[in-house]
Length: 369
Ligand code: SF4
Ligand code: SF4
Image (cartoon, rainbow, N blue to C red; front, side, top):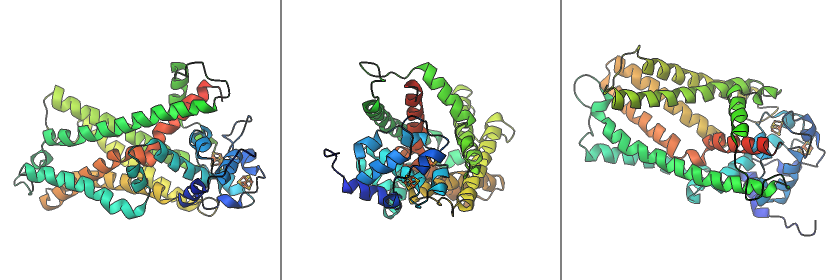
């Protein structure tokens, strides 16, 4: 114990990231007992609460257990001290995402509301600059065709680099995260480093698709259904994007596509699924706010961006069909800004939990935790 030095700066960071009740914990371990997702061997979240009170940053950001927690809030509801361990672990996850992301200033900006206007300004200016440079800074006359406003070649020129940037940042973060997880192996990792194996990856993917861990939650039971809506909405939109590439570059067909084409049906159903999922998430947060919490700015930023992406997408479609050009094109512009925002800042936002939690689950499976 004599060698452990408290890191008060990190304690303060946890507190300001949403773990403000951290100091109330008196180590009774009720949380570790009631948590249905915690293993018997070295259960969480009590040990994370101790590490958080000491500000042991290295231990916390390389702790796979912070990702095995699904923030169901059972521990928070039963904590006799109101220390809200579920929220504290959520705050540590946020700091862990920022720790592995680069450049760091973007992670810092995504975590603070005062930078939101600047973060929005970036995609707005990029899109306006492309529209201005290509002479498209106006409402095109005639039938509403979004391709007349911003041709697909311009869309590709903007969004392919955005996707590449996010992928690179994620790749760097994942490599560093995987390495740091192995510092906590306790002799369970192979010499020369642990390599993720299909026998760990496949069951984890099936578990995520079924949301079986979420279903063990009690206090926040509705969370699983809401989360499933969001997950499958995203999967559907990814399929829609792949179909759009296929229609355009393989079949040579340009939008707008007929409403009954598979692309449109899958896209619209996925958008509605995402909208229902995210709305259930909001309802759920308010339903359990007395026992748990309604979440931090980090959580609400993600919810807000999803709303703007989905609503602007659906409204752009509706106003296009209603032939209201004065609304359709500006709403389509907002849609593009929100999609840019979602993907460009994904490695720094709550969306990154999809990646880090999957990696942590694979690691846990591999070391049989
Ligand atoms: S967080 Fe609450 S339940 Fe868990 S050890 Fe601390 S006081 Fe006990
Ligand atoms: S929030 Fe839920 S999963 Fe996370 S530690 Fe608490 S009880 Fe366990």
